[in-house]
Length: 349
Ligand code: SF4
Image 1 (tube, rainbow, N blue to C red):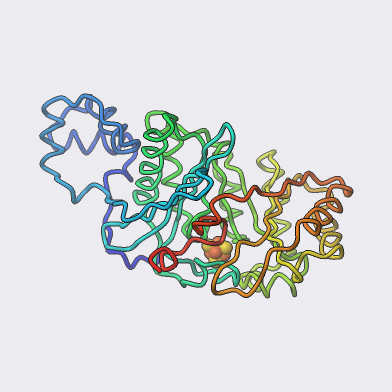
Image 2 (tube, rainbow, N blue to C red; image 1 turned 180 degrees about the horizontal axis):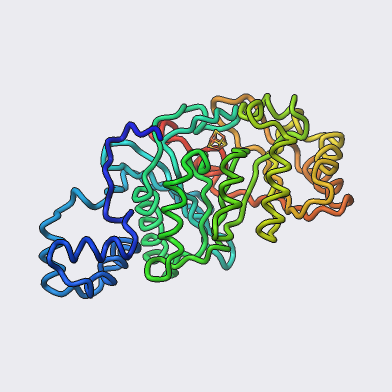
């Protein structure tokens, strides 16, 4: 796996049992594992007994994962807060707390930049820098959870792996982070409340289908023919639509779950009645929920969101074909925290 970070294994990456063994090897009773694990995973510091205090002090920093906030941007509507976090090697990632009536969701990054190069996406426009370690993904969740607690007095219960990067391109570290984040002795987020968003990394979808946990799979399509999709999403050339749809069907069958299909609507590009009909035909018979996302503008892509009545017409065609469809609520657009807008370069611009 690529790793330019030089970031070694951190304590947050260790499983509960590994942490217990680590304490024991250092002459500290395994009985101290629970408060230590909880603190590492959630940031909530309970009462530490003296032997554990001494063990932590002796490690002073370098085995703990840094995710220092260097900027925070709340959106004008107050629902979204975007955080720019600096990691131990100086790399920066963005994490977002998104609020909806009755629900808060953390959107986490899995890579610094992204190798997938989707043309409309600010992260894709940055290029790929490196994968994140599990501990760095956990540190983002911890940060967002603490902010949620501080400002709204609520626990974090929903996660989307939809920030910077393609999570399935960083499969092992993403899965390890989620193993921890769904662990009841840690943050305890329900697996069904975790969505993993992919742009169509078929090998990753197949590996995810074989994973014991039932995370929600969200697939960004944006095009219903190979020719159209490849123009927006270059990895469609590696994993064309037929292969991708087969992997989605299999996932849905193996897991007994619907797959979320995201379709970014770009005015004059993929928003016509004909596009809607082709999408309906592609999804026929599949257990899916379609989420339409009017394009979020980025500086590096010369596209616009369609007019509202075009969005409505597109939605209606899909609904008339029997597909469940929602239009994504716009969140955080004024702070470039919408889908496809995350970029540390944009943040610091
Ligand atoms: S849309 Fe997702 S997969 Fe595509 S370039 Fe952006 S971050 Fe990467």
